[in-house]
Length: 95
Image (tube, rainbow, N blue to C red):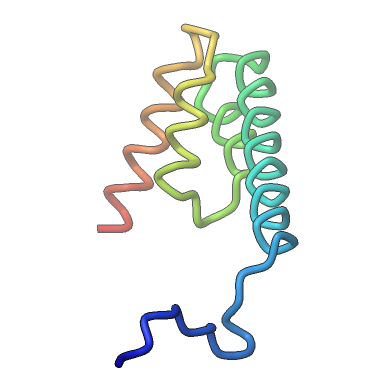
């Protein structure tokens, strides 16, 4: 008769409740920082220099998910196009 009980994960590979909390806290912190950058971009002058300066606060490695959060939370039509152009340039340069 074969044993059909699930095997335990090797030590160090178990997922704990604390790990999932840590991932959620990290995601929440990153989301909040992205929204804060967007709010700053929404209130800055609508010129390349000011918008790019604000977006440079995101760092060099903006993820696709981060870019989507920024784009989805923008509210200033005067800076919106500049934000999108910044991400387009970033994507083109990384290809």
